[in-house]
Amino acid sequence: MAACASEIRDFIRSINDGSTIPAMLGKILSVVSDETSSAQELSQLVSYDQALAEMVLRVANSAIFGHSGKIRDIDQAVMFLGYEKIKSIAVGMTVIKIFPVSSFDIKNLWIHGYEVAFIANTLSESLPTTSPRESFLAGLLHDIGRVIFYKKDPAKFLETAASDDLPVVERELFGCSHEDAGSWFLENTGLPEDIIVSVKYHHRPSEATSYKDAVSIISLAEAMSNRLVPRRENDGLWTPEHDAIMRRFSLTEDDIISIGSRLGGIRHEVEEFFS
Image: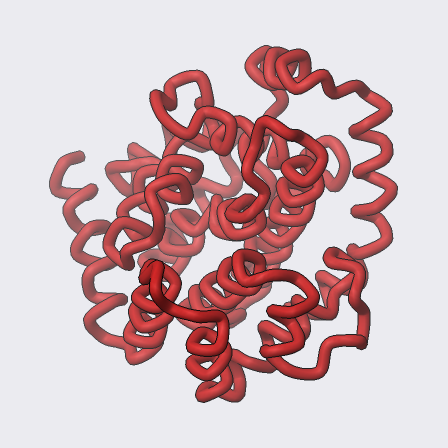
């Protein structure tokens, strides 16, 4: 099993070594982690890559953020949505460029990630105990480990997808869970610690020793998405941990229904984005 897990780590390193896109991601992360950098520097960097800029603007103009068609350039996006939101969108879209839609399975994994991102963003903006700035990005990337498994071995990935006990089968076939693989990828690319922890513990939030609110939001968002939009790719089973999170954040079934209604309004837009 250890050898199998090391193969995944080696594969993740090969992804970063063999593509120019992680270099762009590194530049973006360097800018946004520099406290002296400006929104203008991020805007200029994103604008250099036309395909990336177009993706960022499509997300910024989505119904998720309520600015459909009003935002025409990256500078305007920063003005409307704020530096933190655009930072998260830019990072997320760059990661999607590393793993573009090349199959039906990848498309559905990204659609699922986008739905969880929407729910997480909606939750965090209404909960004073959490910081909403990274929840969209953490939700989008929460299952990046499953994308990595697909890229490494599509046949084994399909075996895991058909299983009712995903973590057990993943460890049997890959030597690690998708939570592990995802957190290793994010560590390797230099993403912030709260994103890494949220991805690592999104199926077992009570085990997280730091960023507990952030982890809880992502875990709850995925569990909600499985109730609201059940699909094969959605492995977010509702557990007693989610009942406890609901109580801790004073959320009710009516809140889930409300989020479900809003999610229904963007489903076509999300599917079109990845078509």
